[in-house]
Image 1: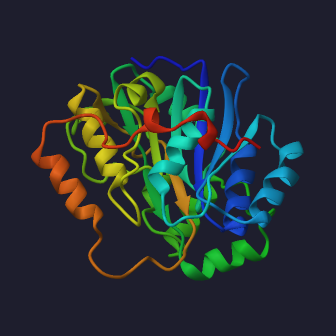
Image 2 (image 1 turned 90 degrees about the horizontal axis):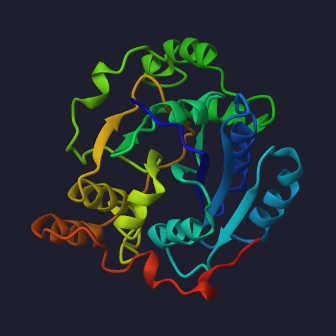
Image 3 (image 1 turned 90 degrees about the vertical axis):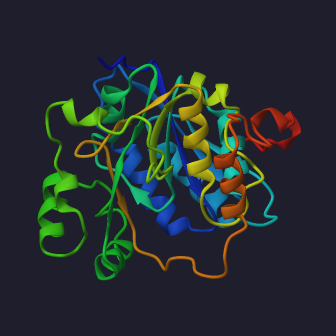
Length: 283
């Protein structure tokens, strides 16, 4: 049985993508909630410039919840540390991580609240919006800022996005416990975790820099403390705006993750506890 959190903190990661971030924040501002679920939004900013700061200040009056800005200096791709900085500001007893290029449907927060269950984290799903449709949306961000499940299901059937059936919210929980010990494909573009479980593993490992595997490291360490995986497929979905995928040489994060797999540790090399209060830039 799920236990509804008292307050949900939605942590949105971003870096110099204010157009994408605006669409994501607008979708979070249009959540259908019955008043029993309190929530806040914390932007985990990995060193964006003034345009992002100005965007957040401009949107604050339009967002029906606290909108916090956790900024850190731009010294390279430090997504794991950026999320830890955001966690220092977050006050929710349940944390939902998404990316700054992933819009959410109006029932997204309510769905995560319904799926939340002590001893489990929730790994949601993602639908990729095709490039032509993303361009149309970016041209009219306010018109597309409230993703409707049925409308997107139809658009996906006509090849404007993939995984159309993830847009549907299907009843029943029997399928949600089928892979309780799997870390594969559990990603922080759509992940719900109790704050007490995050604190038990001391957050993300800030030694991960560059793209990839910081979320796999985090999930594997959660599993090692006895927290289990619950599927959010066909319930909690995000809509991923198209952009070029990063390419390049083999990431040093691969060696970091392989070292974790070969060990039995559940704590990061550098976690939240290593951050001093001075590392926070609260806006």
